[in-house]
Length: 156
Image 1 (tube, rainbow, N blue to C red):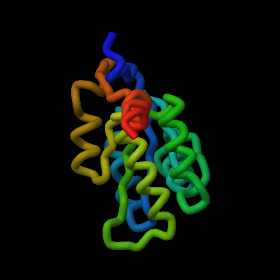
Image 2: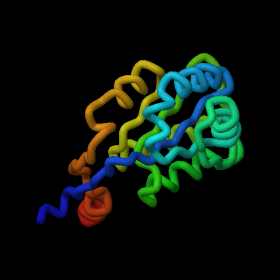
Image 3: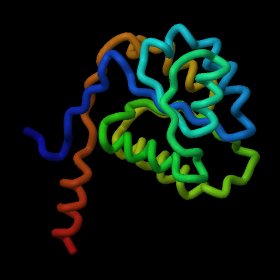
């Protein structure tokens, strides 16, 4: 067994987090409406207002967490660590300053650590949800960061 890597499996039914900054919420709603048939086959969650708006306006069930500035991004990051989220669709607004930018960066970092698919815009989200992997299980190797950190500490 290679302790430098871990085998991770994303099941056939994905656990998808849906997040949108205020300036991108309408784009997220339109995208969810266009992809409703695909999304309703999966388990969905999202940050506060985004989750509520998708549930109310698109008619698909989205479990809501806190809004981003109130810790929602961190809650979703924790769900990634726990294996309860394995894909993120995050329509971020590159032209607006975000008061919770460190939280957003932490979420993006944890998605990278756990090597889960993350879309930061509509085009990438389209590529993800229309991928062959949306309909099947996906198994891949990720770096065992605990082992990497342990090795680095031993070198100090």
